[in-house]
Figure 1 (cartoon, rainbow, N blue to C red):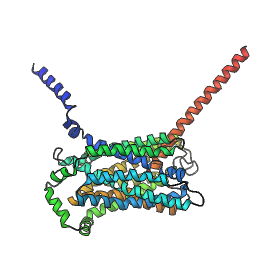
Figure 2: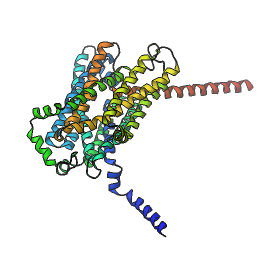
Figure 3: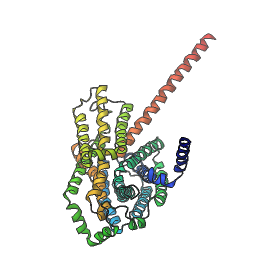
Figure 4: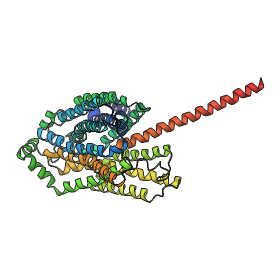
Length: 468
């Protein structure tokens, strides 16, 4: 009787749990997962196939994209600390995030006002594209660091305990899934040079994110009144008084005066620089015959998937990795992974058409995913740990701005100086080109099947004619 009663109690408990708001909000942490997925999905509708979008819509040559991309990345680097510092001073991260998301979506539609360049008007067209693109990146610089900060606040609430910040990686992996689905969907919709589909995709996806963010992101007033982001168990009033005590210059001086934080930013710069160099200039390395590994389109796709898989796995187990090995170890692994990646590609013989080298390259590309996962998961935690409470969003902005803004910009300039004949691709462009190869491979496979079918039909018809 006792056993049956316990079983009935467990059954009733499970049936009520899945319909319980606390189960979804606190046990499954559904809010940060949905926020990351929807925001990064929306962002990648803007940036997928960006090089080809500029070339097809505005007639900008691919070899001119390097300087253009460097300028846009510098804008993202400069804007991220601006927005996050503004959020710290006003203590309204939700409002700032919503304004920035709306601003990015709205400014993207200004591209519709730019006419395709000709030989005589190409310079004016490029200037117009740089102006609009800079405005888009100005707003985009706020999104990643502010959402990171908001998610850390949610995870640091008293409901989850102080250690729940380590769950950040498991929430961030949903952003990686959103990125993968956005790239796949945009590649499918754009197949056949249908780049106009970008505009409705951007409008719809950002509208969805704004609605989700409005209802799911906790109110700024709640953050102000509740002690949910207090890592050291100090009152929120103390944090607010610190923000008022220091001027802008004194606050930034205090932040950069922390040697651990300054050294952390230097590590982020070099890691981001190496990662961006690989993303910009190695997208066609595997497939090239003379100067590459002569991989097929399917093998190039597998190499890309190896990196994405490792990235998701690192995010999934980031809490256990941080607890077992510590944040510093993950940052060291992030550096070593990129060193291993480039060392393998440097020593692999090119032009040999040897499949064994391609399998080794799979391992090298997996290192890229490990590096990104470790750097992102540990970097967000370092920014929270080392920055004063009233500058934690600013610290997130500096981390994000250097990693996805300054580093790619410098990589584009350095790469253009070293190999000017090779047009750099953005990170999303590299992933999009991989997807395009997948679609081309699928199309060629279907063409071959249709050709074989037609040949069989012709043979049957000729055989029937001979019988008659």
